[in-house]
Length: 155
Image (cartoon, rainbow, N blue to C red; front, side, top):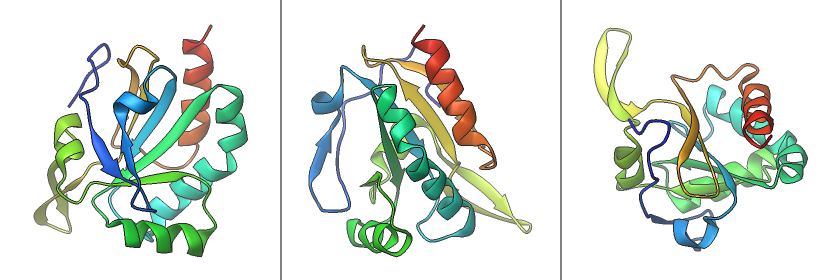
């Protein structure tokens, strides 16, 4: 997994509207990049809705919020429409960004092992380096922690 101080690798991924979002185009500002396992699942829905509610706070902090999962752009679009989300979701169907950040890992669920996304959040500073990270995120109150850390980093 990438660590604090590591440079973020260049990437380009389609969003929910199949528009390509490239790191080079958003670098230079604060970015909250969060990885989640799957659209329309309970924890992922709570997290996406919490980030949506907090968008005004993140805008005041001049931060862009991007969610990433292996779901397709069409799946993201349905998720956004169904839950009235106001965040950008990136589609990583090839898991290239998940692998680059080290969040595509072996997981255990009910005694069975499978590969999947470990829910993780990264704050990226304007220089393109990891400034903070959370691994194995517990959704409850997570967004508050991220906002507080971002405020602290910007002082």
